Image (cartoon, one colour):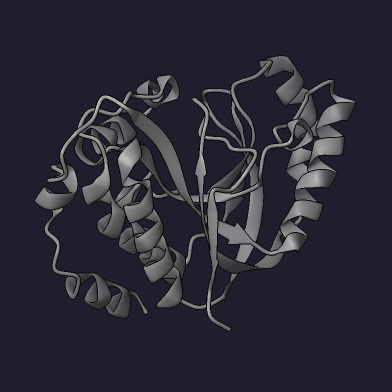
Length: 230
């Protein structure tokens, strides 16, 4: 399976240098767009349950604030005028893919005191994320703003400086963000009461979405969504 994954990437004729150095004209009018995987509705139910558990610890989850549960494939800044090109690439990518199975693996507290619902990575998910980055990175801006949390992870900082995004290629770690940086004591209590008892849950990847995001990479509404062919 991994050999097929490497073979598929080798067939895409875009060099890493092209990804690192976009050729599109740059604009001072930039927007952060998230190209993300759309999960099946079962994920919403799971995230809603966790949200209620967080509420018991006086923690307000992103879900309770109206943010969309999603799995980021590639997030960076783009010149605003490139949105239509981004939509075209996302649509093309979705059309050449298909629905596939994934697993919500465990709840993770990061060293920066964020709370994540980790997704078990698979060769197919990795290949989708890699292909997404290769297809849309040439549309990005050259000098995106570095998120504060990235400074905690030297390897992700290096990826951001090269590709405009910290969680790409070898640094791709699929997840759903439950909370941005928050109270460490409340997180400790939540993990003891609920987080450590989380049971893995299976779900399907249904398509690809695009959303404009805030400084934490979160969005309340999709700009566009493209379902995988059935």
